[in-house]
Length: 189
Image (tube, rainbow, N blue to C red; front, side):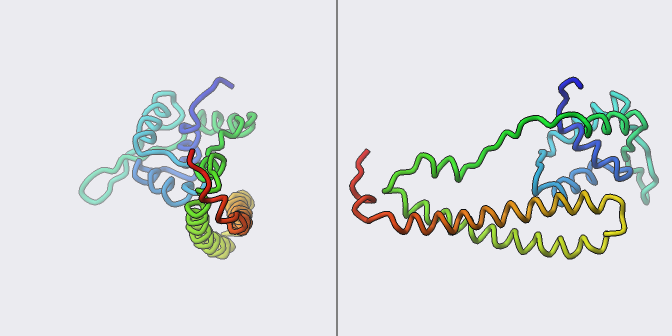
């Protein structure tokens, strides 16, 4: 399969759930996909335009009160293109983690600042884990839907990743606390 922007496939994926307006697609990205995939609003609309131009989706109009609302609906060609993408090999993960970058370049004198970053990360992760557990409970209400196993797998990945990172933060704080004060002060470069 020729290299195509994953933005197109992310938008097509949203359209597999049913007709959506551009606003609906943006909302789906900000509410459901944000934990593992982000696209700016400036990427979504050009992707929609390209998808329509390639015949993978069609514009459909629905009467909405006093104005017409434009929605997009995936076509059979779009479904086929999306299915081909789902079965194609995954590109290597391009992982970027600012906290890891800072840790890698830190020196003993940076331990207090890093400890503060890790404490903040712990707080954020604890909140994320609570949110994931709440979502997991809510997801059980949809267990009869055919996509439930896939939604559940995605959610479990987020939960387990957050729990693992939380454990790493705890270990990092213990290690940073053991750095002697004299090592923290002795550096000038």
